[in-house]
Image (cartoon, rainbow, N blue to C red; front, side, top):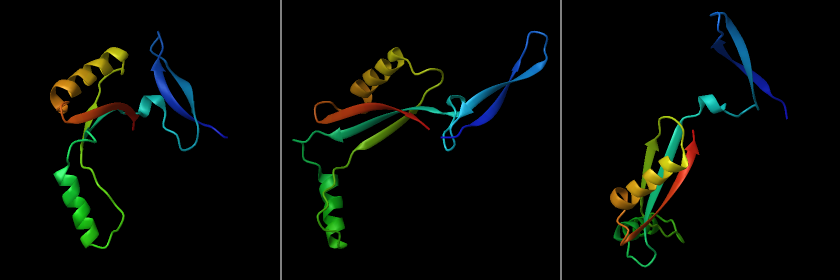
Length: 115
């Protein structure tokens, strides 16, 4: 697999600019160019009725789409400034548990996306 270089400039102690090379595979995004996002997906628990999902499933059947079953949930995209640390993820999990999801009837998962 080939690599191409992307230059990024750093100031040296004497204010001369030097170029530091970062190797990136074709089709890949460098670490410095990636936006950091944490996604919280919230879904009804399996034992909980999902009237919105049932309504969408019924509409799909009326439109000729057979054999599809829908459960409707929520997706929260959280942009994170700085590093995504274990402590930051724990804060987001706590926010999901206390604010974003009703844990009596919903389950949630937290994932990190690099955009």
